[in-house]
Length: 368
Image 1 (tube, rainbow, N blue to C red):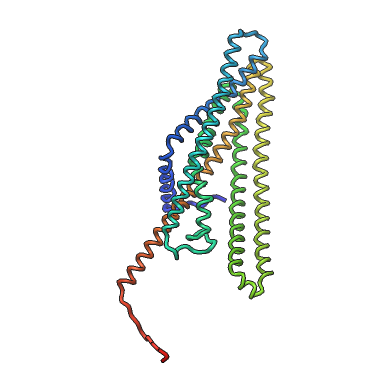
Image 2: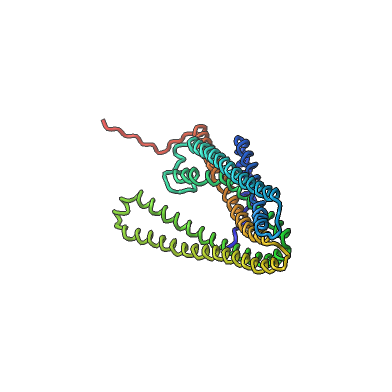
């Protein structure tokens, strides 16, 4: 079920599309920079939060009295952390949404302009998304432009946060308790392999199901455009049977998607719950022996949860990056197809105007 290898031409096309897409962000760099700085503040707050929660727990469960100044300092620091995290998240989200909408609209205008520059007879009135057609325009504007813009905004921020959360989580887990981390590390790889395999199975079923659904939509639209022919041939029942057969095939594939997705989510939940449960059991005995505090165990459990979320976020972001590049290729191919058609039209016209006109076996009749 592995993906087919891309040809050198496809790799070159994707690289060119990626570079061109990156250049599209230049007009929005100030807003993007503000969003990135806010993302760093949000990431720092997320990385520090589990430690702070652990300190708050220890401060309020310790039998050793602490000075009021130390307690107040801890509470002030915690409050400042909560405020900084909230404000940073709000600013980051606002900036990324603004840039995403602006970039999406820019890509849409460029794609629409490219379609308008094409020759009238180059636009085919079909549902074929492989040629210049209203269907291709709809897909480009409604799907490809949005996906390409998202890959440079919210997906990028998600990747940075997940990357930071993953490696910061690993660092803090080792800092708190290398022993607990070692035992947890024995479980994670096997779970990761199972999750990757199930995810690939799901994507395979989903791709096949989407292909069947598109085929059903294309056939139904084509039959409706030629409805007089269908009625004249008396093929209504046969066409319904063909359409129902495609929907049944889609239903069969959707069951595979549902099962694989269910197993994927179930595996992730069971693995996370097992790791956390094991952490509580082993960590509880370490607290009893005085090796770590209750607050440190709380911090460890929280970092474990954030680590799982970070790893899942990285996998999701990498998939969205690939989809974003594919979408960018589709967007920029619209202009390429238009230029190709225009060049072909110019060549044909030039050849006709410069060639010889030959008339053979010409018969002219007139009625007086």
